[in-house]
Image 1 (spheres, rainbow, N blue to C red):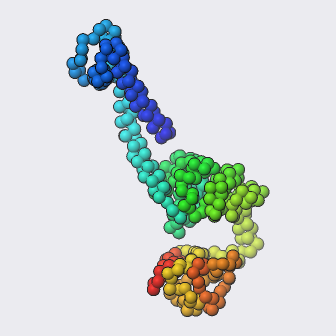
Image 2 (cartoon, rainbow, N blue to C red):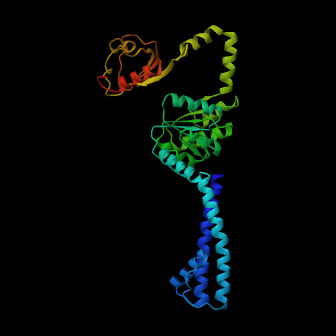
Image 3 (cartoon, rainbow, N blue to C red):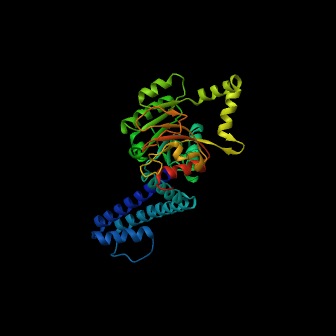
Length: 338
C-alpha cells in the first residue's frame, strides 16, 4: 500500500514534467518562441499567475494555451491533493523512518538474520532481545514489518529466498541465520541461497514436516529444529517423566528469577588465561556454575570440568546463572584485571 502511494506521487511529477515539456515544445513550434520564452509561457500558464504574455498569441497559440491551462489546473490540483494527503497520513514520516532503518541495517556487523516473523520468529526475537544480540528480521508481510519497525526492531520487507534481499541485510558480515518461514520449501531455498552466499555461515532452520530435516541439512543447514516435535516431546515427558521435567524447570526458573544457560568465550586480553578453574574462582566472583568447557581445538564439550581444567584463549565455558552474572563473566573473560 505504501509503495502504491509512492508510485502514484512519482507518476504525478512525471506527468507534470511531461506537460511542461509539451507546453514548451508547443509554444516553440506554434509561436516561434525561443526555449526560455516558451518555458516561461508554459510555467505561467500552468500556474495561472496572470503575468503578461511574452508575445501576442495567434489563434492556434490561444487554443493551445487553453488546453495547457485545463490540463495544468487538473494535474496541479490532483498533485497537491495527493501530496498533502501523503504528508497528513504520515507517509513522509514513514519513508524517513524506513530510510533510517535501511541505513541502520547497512551498518550491521556480527549480527544474526531472522527469516520470518511468525510465531516461531517472535519467540526467536524475544530471545535475541533478552540476550541483547544484534539481529535483523526479513519478513514478506509489510504490515508486520511496520509493526516491528515501530517497536524499534531492525526489519526489512522482502523475500528471504532471494539473494538481493539477503545482500541488503549484510549477510557477508553476519554471524548466523535462522530460517523459520511458513513452508519447508521456502526454508530449503533460503538455506541454499544463504549457504551459497556465505559458505561459513552458521544456519539453523525450522523443519515443519518430519521428513524435511534431511532435505534442509543437505541444503546446507548446520541444524534443524521442529517446534511441533519439541512441543510433543515435552508434553509426553510431562506424563512419562514428570520429575525430570520439574527438575529442568527448577534450574531455569527459580520463583521469579530466570536462570540462563549461556556460552562465554575467553578473549586474548582476559586475566583468566592460563589459570585453572580453581584459580579463576568463577563461582565466587560471579555466582555462576560452570557446567562444561569447550576447548578451542576440540569439538566435544568437557562436561563437569574439574578444578584443574586450565583456561586458554578461544575456550568457551557453558555456565548457568542470571543475566547480570553472565554479563559480569563476559567482562572478566574479555578484559584484563576486571
